[in-house]
Length: 396
Ligand code: FEO
Image 1 (spheres, helix red, strand yellow):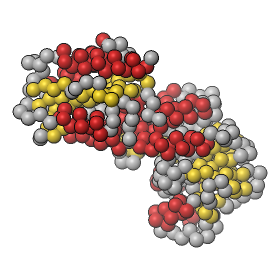
Image 2 (cartoon, rainbow, N blue to C red; image 1 turned 180 degrees about the vertical axis):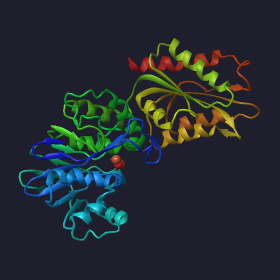
Image 3 (cartoon, protein in one colour; image 1 turned 135 degrees about the horizontal axis):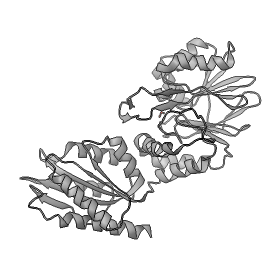
């Protein structure tokens, strides 16, 4: 697939992997993007998951035949992109790897190969392939410490590593030109919140660094190449990395016998009565964390509810709290509810959590002893009202 006269897409679709990083579901698959620039010298940018190597090599050789590759530019060392480096070097023994100091250390660590004759680059370095000039810029922690981007200044392509990436395989279209791309927006938020979400500050630093570039096409390691929607892609990453969110609320609950679930239903009703249009309700035992995190990044309101279990918070709720805290989530309007049968702990844990992550807790948690039948649900409806009022007043 030609992106420009001498710049080719040689990546692959993965429609069989169940869990990205062993954690995150891929209902629409994922693409591992790699690019080939053919000039006086040939440059390959990133590779693909090693399981796709045969197909990948076929794609490369369909473009360059028996010509050797001169450089492999490594923007990111996570094995979904770096997995084929060892095999590429076996096929092209004279290829020079191009990366920063940390990159080449990781190549040695992952592939057990010497990088003594490879090319170490630093911020601002340039490599000429002939008529194409590659400029390197480091964007540490988007998503690993070695991550960098490569800007090709003749055609104005930004090879951005994981930055601006999204889940979802490429369905015939490689770029967003004349393509329906609606489903990628949700998958972009899910990708960001699951994979990159912890690194808001480094993403902000990277965006400031890239601001001055004149970009015709963003070529990320995952998802389509962006040409028509560049502004929206950058805007989306900018908002997500500032933890900025839309007016809406996510209600998550754990429930063993349906009593705490009924509390969640009442909270959601209170939110709706309070004027909130976008409300998501999730059972933390039944909806994968990946999708819950996506909506927590999307919406400003968050209400969590849990029963007390073994004297602690419900295990799946604990997992969600850890996932939120480890992403340094900020700026959320928060409410909490919970239940117990003989000794309460869940709401205490939720309150401590809110204090620890500096969420704006609109009112004291609502606590229920034993079953919903003997409980006055008005307390939960009012919790929903309170969160709604704060959300709407903050949106003005
Ligand atoms: Fe797509 Fe951080 O690797």
